[in-house]
Structures are given as structure tokens and as C-alpha cells.
Image (cartoon, rainbow, N blue to C red; front, side, top):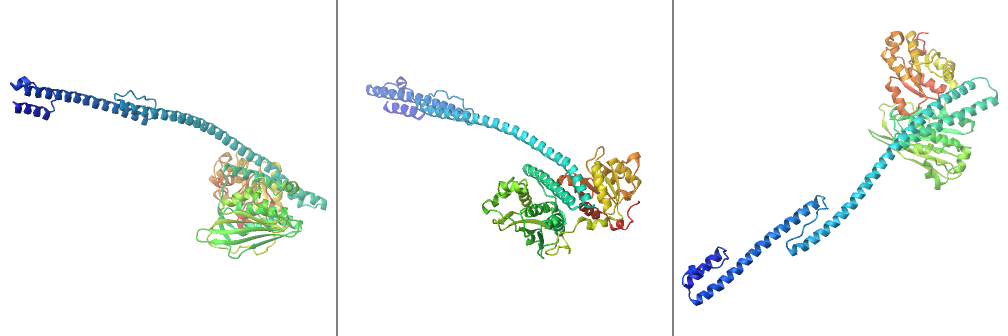
Length: 536
């Protein structure tokens, strides 16, 4: 029987059936076997209880782990308000407390972060509103300055033109002196207007270059023509030196390069009472794609304290307050020059000492212009002579002037006629088209801003040969007549609009006889000067 009892126990353990044995089924047992069977059943009962407990613990553990996993998943998704339910097991409940503490901390951090984000979004929206307002204000300021420039340049053109006409008449010495002073003061006012406009462009980040082919000689000749008379009156000497290896023709922004040189030479003239002013140009480097030149403007003037020299390139800055009171100026010229030089890929600097003069120097990068021409100015060349010396070169040229301002009509007519040109003046774009329908001209000087049909539209119709009064059409040769823009708007984009409309050249007011003569001769062929170009 003992073996039967052992076999039953072995079978129960093998099948993990922890249930008491039915001793009656095992047959008659001895007293000792019955005691052994009772002990076995007690053991199996305990094993059965432990098995049930293990199953319960495993189920509770799996449930707690699942709760914990779900809560952590919600937290990972940003749902920090998900509370972790109570755990079945005390050990897991300790972990639950830790997880809950972490969740609360994350919830606090999330709430603080959300508040900060909301604050930043609100601040961003405020900044966007302020930016939009600033942009609107800047645009309004720019439009105001552009309109003011136009409104100021139109009468200034009349003043300077009348001054030039008066200087071509017989005047007493005091009268000539008064007119020259008025002329110089007006040019200073024009310079201030230009500086304010350029500084506004710098503030907006809209200052741009307009590159094209040009001769370095022309830029330097223009300096001489502009400052020659003033330098002679002051008893100074202007020397221009160009190194022989400097290319005669380049690709770059001729007007902006000239503007920088005019600012620097103008300052040199302003602050020099005795001696000379020299302009030097040298080659720094050259390859197939880039040409780097160095420009120097030296003077023997009052000089600058080295401690304040570098600050001169900040806007509205001069050496000291007395400089503005004594010499005038806005303090914008050098700041604008610095910005222009940087646009040209260079740097602007100064070497100076009090009482020993100054040397302003800058580098600029250009592109090669291809074939060279022998139009380099001679070293030490003197400034160009008076404008009147070359006015006869317009003889035989017929000019149509379209200008709505009566005083400017008079100025343009007299300056051109004094140069020998035949001049007809009209007051609008429509009248200009009608005049071209009646007769041929060698060149048209077209004011851009006129009532009714402006100069841009009139030029477009000239090029198309249609849209004329009474449905007339221009003969093909007259559609190609050179048109030079006359405008009181002085920004590069204005020039671009004129060229896009079909104009051949661009003159910014105030005009001078010299600028008009150069422009006319630049677009009119030699046939017109021989009297073959236009019908009377």
C-alpha cells in the first residue's frame, strides 16, 4: 500500500494537482499509512493555498503594471492630469507614490511652461503688431521723404538754373559774388536732401547698387567739374593721380562710386583752408572676375583727433559740436559713404592727426569691363573748365523739352539755347506726342512727373508709335528718338523705371547746363550736330 500512496503523491505533484488525496480510493491503509496520508494531504493543502496566492499576486502584479504603464503612456502624451489608481500590492503602491510625485512635478512644469508659452505668444503677437506699425511708419516716412525731395528739388532746380543763367550775363563783382554764394548754398541744400533720402534707405536695408559699364576717367572728371571752381576760389589745388595699371573701364555703380568720392572731396574742401587736395586711385588685386581698387582722398586741412576718428562713420556724428556750428553739415555723409563702400565689397577708413590733415581711404570691388580704352586721365590733371566753354557743341541739335513747371521750362530753354540748340517746349506728355507727330527732333528731354499723361507713359507710346492724339501714328524713325528723363526723384529705382519705360538716359534735378549737355551729346549721333538729324 505504501507504494500506492507514493505513486498517488508523485502523480499529483507531476500534474501540479495540489489537492488532498482521497485516501479511501487507495484501499485499506495501515494506521501508519493513514498518518502519512494525512501529512501528505496537509502538505498538498498548503501547496494549493500557496498556488492560489501566487496566482492572485501574479494577477495583481499584472494589473498594477498595466495601470502603471497606462498612466506613464498618458504622461508621455502630455496628459499630466491622469491620476494613477491605487495598487493592489503594497510594494507597487510604493512605486505608485513615486510615479504620482513625478507626475505632479511634470504637471507643474507643464503648467509653468504653458504659461510661459502663452506669455511668449502674446509677446510675439505684440511684436508683430509693433513691427507692422513700424513698417507702415517707415514706409510712410520714406514716401514722405521721397515726396518732399520731389517738391524741394523742383524749385531748387529753378533756383540753380536761374543762378546759372544769371552768371552767363554781365554782372558787377558784388552781384556775381551774391549769385555764386546763392548757387553754392542751394547745392548744399540739395546734398542734405540726398543724404536724408539715402540714410532712410540704409535704415530700411534697401540701399542697393545699380552696376553698369563706366570709365573711371569720367568719375574723376566729374569731380573736377563739380569742385573745380570752388577749389580755385578757395586758393586750393586739386590733384588727381591714377596708377597706370588701373583699368580704364569697369563694371560697377558709377553713380554710387562718384557719390562716395564727392562726399570725401567735399569734406576735404570744407575743412581745408590752405594747401591742396589729392585724389589717388591704385590697383589692389585683379583676376578674371574681380578688380579691387584703392581710393585715397588726402587734404592739408585741420585734421582729426585720432580718438574720435573712427566714430566719424556713425550717423549724425562729426568731430565735435563746434564742427557743425562752424562748417555745417548733417553728419550723414560719412555714414552713407561707409554703407556704400561696404555694398561695393570694400572698407572705409581714415588716418589723421590734428593740424596735419587727413587721408580717407577705401577699397571697392568691380568686375572687368572687357576691352580697355585709353581714356585714363593724366596724373595731376586739372579740373574741367567752366561749363560755358563747351556750350557751342549743341549747335545744330533740335531738342524737345516736355516740362510742366513754367520756371523750369524757361531754365531748360535758355540753358540749351545758350548752348546753340534749337528748342521747343511743351507742358505735358500729350503735347510731347503731338509735337513729335508734327516734326522730328534729335532728342527729347522728358519730365517724368507731369499732370495727365506722365513722362513714362508718353515714352512708352513714343516707342510703340501709337496712342497719339487724334489716332495718329509716329513714323518709325521718330519712335527711336532718344529720350532723356528729367525727374526730381533721385533714387536708383526711379532710374530703373525710366529705363524700363524705354528712356535712354536719366537726369536728376536740379539740372545744370553741363549735365544736360553731356546727356544730350551722349545720346545724339554726330549726324544731328552736322544739321542732318532733325527737321526744323
